[in-house]
Amino acid sequence: LGHVPGLPEASAQHGLDALIAAYPKPITARMTGITMGGGLGLCAHASERIVTAGSRLAMPETIIGLYPDVGVLYELSRAPGELGTHLALTGDAVGPSDAVLVGLADRIDGPADEGLLAGARSWIDACYTGDDPARIVAALEGSEHPDARRAGATLRLRSPLSVCVTLAAIRRAAALDSVAYFARDGDYLVLETTTLTRSVWVSAEATEGAPSTAVPATM
Image 1 (spheres, rainbow, N blue to C red):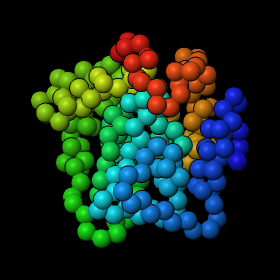
Image 2: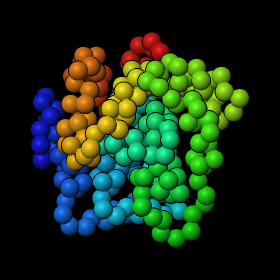
Image 3: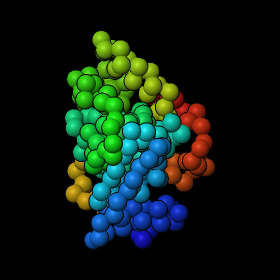
Image 4: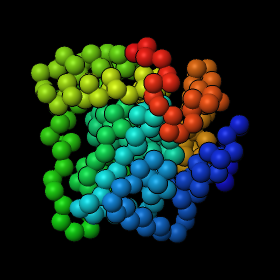
């Protein structure tokens, strides 16, 4: 299933995601209810991804001091405009219509409410430009749109280091040509030149579930 140096458990998980992405036979993933984190990594790369009216999808890693992995940043980097960047940085959950819009699902089984993200493209695309997370936060906080200001307040509650790493990762993910590569070892290799990121990976503070306050608030 592949290997990430120093991260044997992550290697097995990411290798499985890569296997699903490249598997020659059809794989159907039915995401009913809450699908987040590693569960989304298992489903997002299937050949057919189905959601229902009650589906809620998210990669909430910036809340706990990590960054979205399992190849989902590859998918989010290909969402319309900066919608994927918004979801990756905030960790916000989306319903079925928005999941289809951003490319995390292919179709909805049954009726579902209209999504929220299509109507938010104007302020999301305007505020989430560039590679500087501090500028993005400033743009959100200075926007005339109340939803943008709420997003800025949300980012203030996230791990500053996680937000910085996630932004760099989703920008680099957009340049990759294979989700299988990203899911297998790109989550680590795409950032291996960032010394600070590598040190966090081997730190006890990187344990999933650790409070984001373990990372100094430097943003």
